[in-house]
Image (cartoon, rainbow, N blue to C red):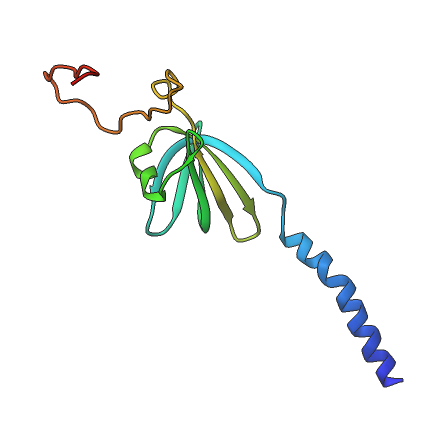
Length: 133
């Protein structure tokens, strides 16, 4: 009798465990907005959607993409103000980003040759460089 009671309890737990795990694992969602700030040390990412800010904890295995190519996480600190898309999952504790896509800006989408947009500005008064020099 006692063995059958233990067996029945173990069987019920084995059946119920996947349903409890499924409640904590949610389908990934996407959020889009303007990159407000990114701290590579704490891996905290903040995007602005209108007047609302959303904060994400970036996972250790997150992918950072720009123009279809992987970039380093620290590169996002130079891209404050640009549009981003964030794939995340959420639970009762917070929102966890596993992918951040930096959207192409108007200057980088002007050419499809794979050239990236400049990250620094030209010095005032300096003559523009010609392509052959």
